[in-house]
Structure formats: C-alpha cells, structure tokens
Image 1: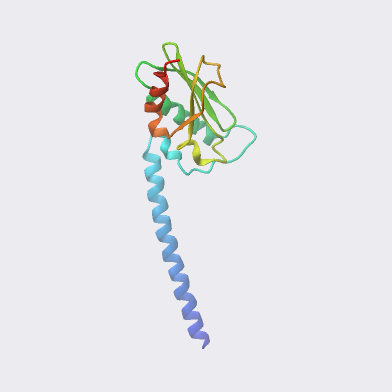
Image 2 (image 1 turned 90 degrees about the horizontal axis):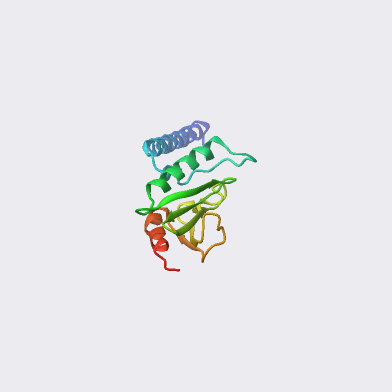
Amino acid sequence: MEQAEIIKEKIEGNEAQIEALLEENKKLKEHLQTKSKSNSVEKWLGYEFESSCGDTDEFLAFVKDFRKFIKENLPDNSELVGFNKNHFECSGFVKRDTHYVYFSISDVRYWQGWYDNVLIRTAKHEKDWTGGSNRFTRLPDFKKNVEYLLNFDW
C-alpha cells in the first residue's frame, strides 16, 4: 500500500471519529439541557457524586432537591417531622397523627439505588431508627407506599 493511500485512510478514520464525537457531544448537550430544566430530584439520576470526607456542594444541592421532593410527595394530612443529612445519605420521618414512617437512602456516591430502593418502615416515634420490617419503594411510589404504612394498624 502506498503512503498516500495510508494517509488517505487515516484521514477518513479521523473524520469518522470526529463525526462520532460531534454526535456524542450533541446528545450530551441535549441531556444536560433536559437535566438543567428539571427542578426535580430526577435530574440527579445517573450523576456520579464526588467522594469526599466532607459534604460537597453537589451533595448539598442533591439533599435540597431530595428533601423538597419528599415534602412535595407526602401523603395527605402528614408531615415531615425529621430529616437527616448524613455522610452522602439521607433519612427522615413522616408523621400522621400518632403513626410514623422512617425512610432512608444509601450512600449516593457508591450506589445509584437511591431512586429505585428507598427504605421505608413503620416507626413508633421520630427517633425510632430500628422500627418495623424493612420495605423498599421507588421514589415515584413514595407517597403511595408511605400512605400504606401510615394506615398500618398496630
């Protein structure tokens, strides 16, 4: 193969790579625009949190969105009576009358399950971290499943 042919093939390969990268950048920009327009906690889906020995700005922003989501998705006549920001984890309690439900998400840095596996269980009070049997819910079903537990007859 002549040197000119080799160079021509290399140019074609580079152009194909450039085209693929431009297409990938286009998709990433569209994804970023969609996420930035979203005011929901869902904008954090798939986000890779920086690990740190202290709170990061990104985690504090996530906590703010997560707490807002929980408050906006409480069952009727219930209230958020406790919310704890732990080391890259969150937990809290929902109360209606004398019934409590504890909820918790695991470390968001190492486990993307915070959206699909929110721990919920009955509790006796807002300091009852051991409570009833562990159950799990997806975040979109949080309200419905917390409602179920609040109606649980002790």
